[in-house]
Image (cartoon, rainbow, N blue to C red; front, top):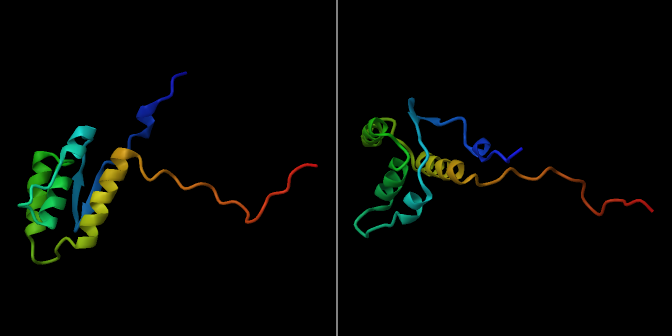
Amino acid sequence: MPHDLDALLSKDRSFIVRGETFTYHDVKPEVLSAFKANGKMGPWDLIDAQINLFLSDSDRKRWKELRARDAEPVTIGQMNALLTWLLETQTDRPTNPPSPSASGRGRTAA
């Protein structure tokens, strides 16, 4: 039976920020690696642009509106966590942590 790499894809493609639910889609690796700061963007514009790579046109519009709000703004922590989560789901990183094991050397059969 062939190894099913489709099983690596995230089943949950939605996230909530300040009560708004968004859905992301997969992007080609070239899209992520080709994205470069052009020196004209501030750091938050750069993060917004990276997040927008994953969003549909309608979600991009809502994200922009959400980011423009003064009341209950999207925080730096939320933006960083969202971008990290989107990149991790696309790259399957980080991998699941290893199972805990007892400290010290294990006993072996004599």
